[in-house]
Structures are given as C-alpha cells and as structure tokens.
Image 1: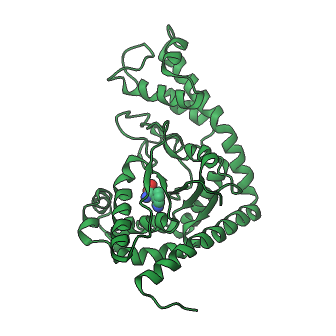
Image 2: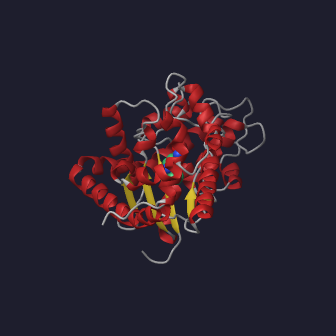
Length: 332
Ligand code: TRP
C-alpha cells in the first residue's frame, strides 16, 4: 500500500443499517477511501458477546458485507473482510488482554449498560469486548479510527493498552486517533426525537432502515413526530423538525438556510413528504446494488475471501512481531 495514513473501522453485523448508521458512519467511509488506506471489518466475533441465533448471524454478516459494498466500499481500493476469517484478531486479543487491567474494563460504560440489559448472560466476552476491539485496530497499527461518540471510551482504552505495551516491550504500536467526520450528523428517532435512532426501537415507525422501500420510507416520515408550531426552521426545542432538517440536509446537500426558504409558507406535511422522497431517492441505488450483489453469491464470496487474505497478510506481519516481543518462541 502507498504511504497514506491507515484507517480502520468495524461495524456490527446487524444485517441492515439504520439511516442513523448510514448518515452517521457508513456513508463517510466511502470518501475516506480516496485519501487513506482503509480497512473495514464486519465484527461477527464482537456480535456473539450477546446471544445470537447462528442462522441469523451468518445471514446478517453476509448482508452487512454486501451492504457495505452497496454503500460504496470498493474492494479494489480498500480491504473489506469478516472479522472471524482473520485469526490474528483473536491471537492479538489474548496478548492485549494480558496487558489490560480488570479495573479498566470494569469502568467501561458500554459494559455496565450491556451487563444490565443482558443480566442473565454477563459473559467474559462482553467484559473483554474492548480488548478485542483494541486488537482489531492494533493488528494493523491503524492511525485513525472513525467511531461514534459511544465508542470513544473504547478507543481511549485501545490507546492506553498500546501505550502500556510500548512501555513494557519497547515502542511498537502507534497510538490510534479517533477520526471524527466533519459531517456525520446524529440522526434521532422519528417518534421521539430526543432519542438516538436505534434498530432496537420497539416502534418500527421510529427507524428508517436503509433497505426499506420507498412507500415505507415515505409513510414513516409522514408519521414523524414534530411540534405544534408550523414553521420549518432550525431552532432549539424543535427537536423533530431539527432532526428532519438534518436528514434532509445530509441527503440533498442543502444547508439549513436554503431549506428554510424552500419551505417558507409551506406546512410540515409538505416538508415531511419532501424529506421522505429525498431519502428514498438517495437510498434507491443502494437498494438496487444490494439486491444485485446478494444475488451473486459467488462474487460476494470471492470478495470476502480475498479481503480476508489481504487482511491476514497485513496483520500477520504485525502480530508476529508482537509474538517475538513478548517472548514467544519462533515456530519456524
Ligand atoms: N465496537 C464497535 C461498535 O459497536 C465496532 C467495532 C469493533 C469497531 N471493532 C472496531 C469500531 C474497531 C472501530 C474499530 O460500533
């Protein structure tokens, strides 16, 4: 690879992304490919830290992979692979775990949240989740990691682990920096715009999935919760309208002033319909490409097999050096 900075990011294999995942994260992964060497990974090993149905996990992993391609991740430009295909992640994770303190992991807010939500299954994978995430990143010595705010604490921990390793064994790992996208707006629930849009929302009308068809998208936007005012403008307290404006802006490229004048004198009904149509039109090519890729299983397989080979070759060099540094005997 050329001498560009290296980006690494991972995404959970949920099978389909929400409009929030898309606008806030995945969408920004595509332009990064022009400026950086990018490595993107579907993290099926992280997924099993909570109970999964094996049949669904396999399907969702493949769908997530195809969906990333449909969103413009180009397997010629970037390395796109499935985490469990590349053994170095688990190998490095063990070593990093031996350089991570129990206390540090106990302080992770995601662990605290998830162990409350899944109180019947507080397994040790859930606890060491951030160690595996650190291994994902450090196995490639990545410079930059695009993450949402909810993952910043994990990235901070990855830096601390890398730093501690460097102190113990001699300078080796780069300290990965968070990459915060300039755009990457946060998308809120359509039914309760004070809450983040989340796939696990009980109310399906709260969430746009990027594979929803046009009618579904328009219907959900028509039902979006707004306020009792009538003016389309971005103001404190108008959470619903602010969210719709953010969404409209990010799919059309129009700024808030332009949107305000476009809808001045028009009602919320017209605005919601316009947002629905703009989102549906924006997502249409992704849906089409996803359908095309999903139908071509052989091509998809070729892509993830080659992706795994490239990822293994890249990370093996780094992890072999780590093995030597900690004092493991050379196998050959
Ligand atoms: N924990 C991340 C999330 O849930 C996913 C992830 C796994 C990740 N490994 C990573 C993100 C490495 C960035 C880098 O969103």
